[in-house]
Amino acid sequence: MSVAARFRLQLRQFSLDVALAFEADGVTALIGPVFGHLYGQTMGGQGVDPVEHFKAAMQFWIAGIVIALIVSAFLRETGRARPR
Image (cartoon, rainbow, N blue to C red):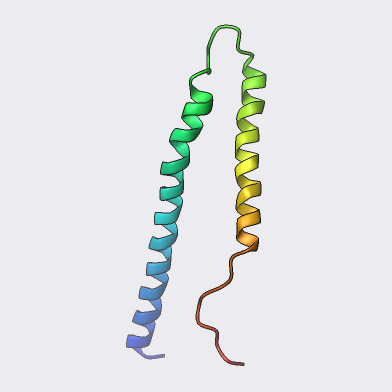
């Protein structure tokens, strides 16, 4: 493999890494305030059971994972397919 081909391959991998990092940070930036609004206001309040609060907060993340799995089932690969 030539130096130019290796460079293009490394550049492509770097671009993919940057895109995935941007996606993860973007999703975190969007979901964080929603989670904080729903569950952060009651944390440590009078009469709030910490165990029940934790369980309710975990249901939020479990629901998010289930939704992500369902959405990912409808996505299709868009990369270049190599002929066999």
